[in-house]
Picture 1 (spheres, rainbow, N blue to C red):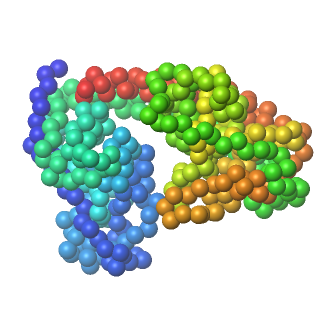
Picture 2: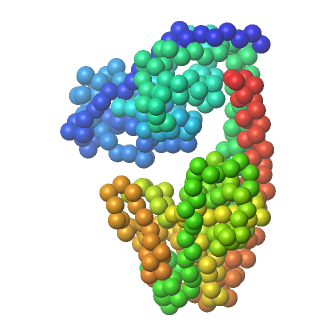
Picture 3: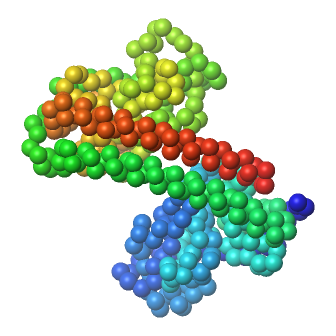
Length: 398
């Protein structure tokens, strides 16, 4: 498979979106495509509701109108490592649609030399991200444009080989998408079972007795570990990013040597923990996680807390309850800062929640545990597909 490196402008047309001002927005007309519409590698127009008039769209902005098959990518506002989530293809059903600021579109100059999906996969590669990161030195946030892309290169191979690579990667991506949907359906099943058994938790439709959490748990805060003393082996330290997804996420792990003086801050599989600090008006804190058995023991870092439960409340019940948006907002709605948001121990303890009979809670817990067994099987299949995908990406693009 002969590979040559070419500059991106030699094989692609690219264009940055215009800076449409808030004063130009209208309630109807031609929809604007924003960074917020780029979700998990696809374009979702339901995530924003901004328009400009047809007069402006087909007038001064007509050269920014999208076409069927355009590849759109974010050019600012996210971290480089997440760029593969912030891109997607335009299809005919989305039109008419006009680009807005912080987006860039790509079109292939000659389909006999380059397939747009091959280029899309290259954008997700480590090689492209490394080039991009070098272009935006001094910041981990994306902020680039056509002037940067003009300096970048990409690998070019015969189109028949491109088609073969696209087919292989598409097949694996479809498998991963299917596994993700299975996991989502299992989560929805648990949520539906919760409402069936306990009613609407916001309105307490089944009239369960409501009590403060202080009557049912204690809050143990994390330890202020010094980051400069983290090591590459030992006991993993749970930071906000490791628990914010609602499950333990072994990303960017750091470790601390076993220290008996810190036994109070040791967490174990099955413990319920919560993230306490995030950004005002963002869903990046107040998230709960039941620790899995990835490790035998963990340390809890500062700005996270363990919820140590008493006998009359089940961790699976409380974990699901705190994931319901109206309940969670009772904690995250207490804002004490302009940018950084914090939940205090007192906020948690003062939270009023419905307390059904423990026997009913335990029945729900048994259902969750059974569902979790299915999730483990699906997650294993997803992880295996991801490993294969990553290895092929490395092979094809470096």
